[in-house]
Image (tube, rainbow, N blue to C red):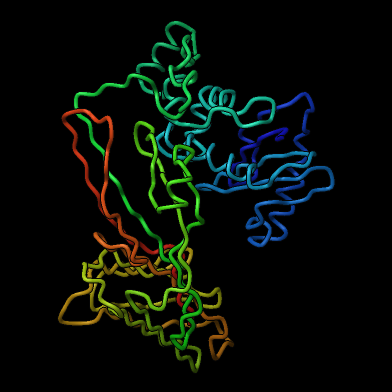
Amino acid sequence: MLQCIFLLSDSGEVMLEKQLTGHRVDRSICDWFWDNAVSNGDSFKSQPVIASPTHYLFQIVREGITFLACTQVEMPPLMGIEFLCRVADVLSDYLGGLNEDLVKDNFVIVYELLDEMIDNGFPLTTEQNILREMIAPPNIVSKVLSVVTGNSSNVSETLPGATASCVPWRAADTKYANNEVYVDLVEEMDAIIRRDGVLVKCEIYDDVRFHPCVRFRPWESHQILSFVPPDGQFKLMSYRVKRLKSTPIYVKPQLTSDAGKCHINVLVGIRNDPGKTIDSITVQFQLPPCVLSADLNSNHGTVTILSNKSCSWSIGRIPKDKAPSLSGTLVLETGLERLHVFPTFQVGFRIMGVALSGLQIDKLELKTMPSRLYKGFRALTRAGEFEVRS
């Protein structure tokens, strides 16, 4: 049972506080949390569950906003983390994004959503389709009417039809002029590659989870996903494939330093051709603090160096006639002969039309379907946490 939810800005300001039970949680717990986050850095912020002197804390961070939940009672930690993730997803969907200004401009809707999503500390209605029938998303017309009439509530006076249904994620008797079903198979590849090119870790990431609409028995016995789908976009299933043997592209950085300068050369190319075009390739890295200036050039794509010493190399697609390379010189601070702290390269890419795990969908059958129906399937593989160490 959760007792309170706080939303903190990237400066530690409490933007929103929602007390969920009769036991009031004091805001001083946020001061304790932020003081430890500042003193301990990323190692503290990466912990999803934290034990404070008075409470257990659950936290997630989305777009610079920290979602913090508190409890003093025993409860499954994954329930608290999953609920915070669902709150962040719903707010992002309702507000068209997620940042400090959007939250502050839509306080009323955020509180109304939390009232419906959790009751007395226990998750209640978390399906976005039902929430949209209960609470109207913000728009210019609703804001003008609230100013004119003085009524700022967006809550509908009638309950959605799905609340009395055995499948609460889908409204009853839905009818549309056009009926479409599209299945997107999206895989994210996480990889860690050492400076000598040895693959430390490579996996298509996501833990196996199902949407509540999935009937588990057909999947367990015949690997069939049988379900009554919600209206609109939703995540049906997520999974994780470990121990992939190779990556579709390679990134080979070389850094040599002497006499107060460091020469850098980064080569990018295709390691294993997936049979589809690899595009949206990017390489990002942070220059060490000891670097005073950098002069970087590439034979393909564009290189950008920001004021905070972060470098971004946008490649796009790899041309057939040459391998993209980045080269340049880093000037070190006075008194430093060699570079001792080496950057880690974050790689991004996208491959349309293929799932590198080998997962395939044999067919898509629909029962009790309308006469006119459009259905389709597409696959996408993209980089997740893809790191190359130098």
